[in-house]
Length: 302
Image: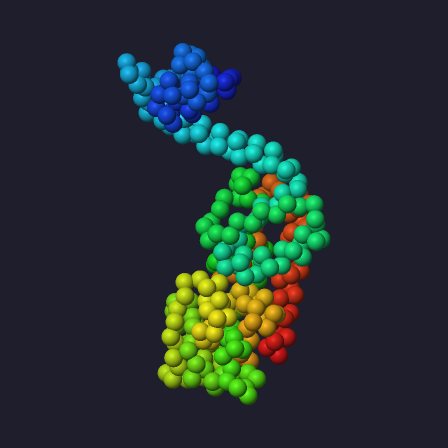
């Protein structure tokens, strides 16, 4: 009959010795004697019923079962340390950790987080702008705004992106108040690295494809938007990314039909925190801000 593990006292010694490959080095890190570390691990081995280390005169080596068990212990201890740090860090209720894609964080979220902090001044906001996918199963992130594909009817979808053509008013010739779709054939066109979307936009707006000069591509929506602000040409870009620039007048939008895009923004959160006030407040605020943005897009295309 298998015996349950009744003591956890040797797990930290195991993780440290496995990571450093030495009882002596583990003892130095843990401020113990090598003999104390060795005895803790020996007690753990006796309780488990199998050897964790092969002991050689000058070093120790994990057994096959030892490597397997040590990997699990390392992962569990990392989760425990993360949880402890989160609870120690200014109070779990008062810290909101947000992960968002780089372009969306820079061009949409960061400029309006002041609105949210005015409503909830007690919250300490931590915004991580990165395109990497983060884990929502630990306490390093509370909510994540992710960009990508989605299933029909997905309740996590914030909004489905549309592409619009925008330009800086600084590139308007003297005496002109705006560019029209017919002007596109005489202007440099900017995109996110592929002319496929420009061809879709032209088709949606009844324009010929052959006579246009698609000149430059950029790797991120945010960089593409900044190129348009700098007057490098007309950019076909995600509406959310240029929304703030349009509001401030740094960019103007062509009076054309926006085109749909395959990707959407989704709001996800740590499932264990779904009903925490900070999550509820942020979700409600973000939903309202997105609704206002979508109303502005609808009004600009009527």
